[in-house]
Length: 322
Ligand code: UGA
Ligand code: MN
Image 1 (cartoon, helix red, strand yellow):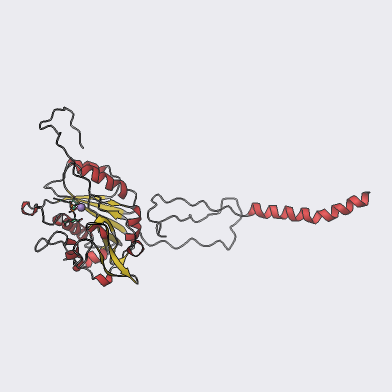
Image 2: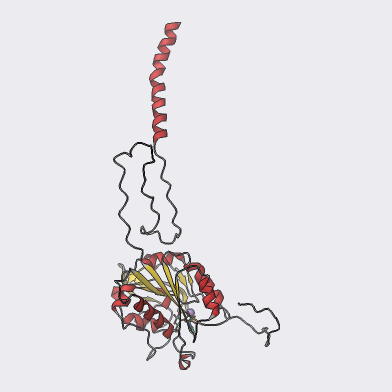
């Protein structure tokens, strides 16, 4: 009886040992590192995104195993995105700028250049910018009265003021990498758009929704190159693209100091082409948004509000900013 028990014990013993060993190995496997989440999600292109901090040995613990990989080399700086927004006073202005601020605030390393079409900075815009929670520059320049007519291009002077500020700011230093785009205040921008434009080498392009008399306008791409335009309006434009459909690297802006928006001879809808012609060619354009097959920005154009019931003289003693 005793020997039968003993022989069973010796048969089971190796199995028990194997199970104990396996349990031990499992509990020693290191837990996955806790990676801090980046504060700003939109740019997850590998630079400036989430990286686990270099691990350090805890005091009193034995040294780390030798094969722990070294911390990665410092990431190259994240290019700054400069958004130039011309804006003018009207009932929907604050709503438009609030929508833009709410988007831009979520983008890492974005600098908002807001240019008022006005003789002075307004209190409404100053207050809004102060509370926007993002790096910004507040400029103003009035459009000369003779150009404030329907059928004439808009915001020429304001975009040029933004360009002049950028060139002035970087006149001495070797510029930190940057990308510029023209963010009109009546558009809606997806966060993905900023990931796309951030990698612009010279001039990049993408589709724009609700523009050109169609659901979208887009550059036509073949083998990674722009070969034409899908548009419902004046397909003969050299760059049949909306202001919201391209970005330019800061380097290109600085190395073409004379490239500006022109009043002379310019027609509405031709400003984009007139400007792009000065700095690039169609062959050189870098298609973004999956070879220009995704709409990431929309020309939403807030409806003009009907204020027919607005009293002529102020009847309310409370003065509320709208
Ligand atoms: C279209 C294009 O989308 C614009 O990029 C282009 O500048 C314009 O045509 C043009 O050809 O001039 P559209 O919707 O007709 O735009 O123009 P708005 O969106 O009313 O104006 C473009 C930008 O200029 C806006 O950010 C707007 O706030 C600003 N703006 C407009 C002024 O600063 N002053 C004005 O008197 C009018
Ligand atoms: Mn517009």
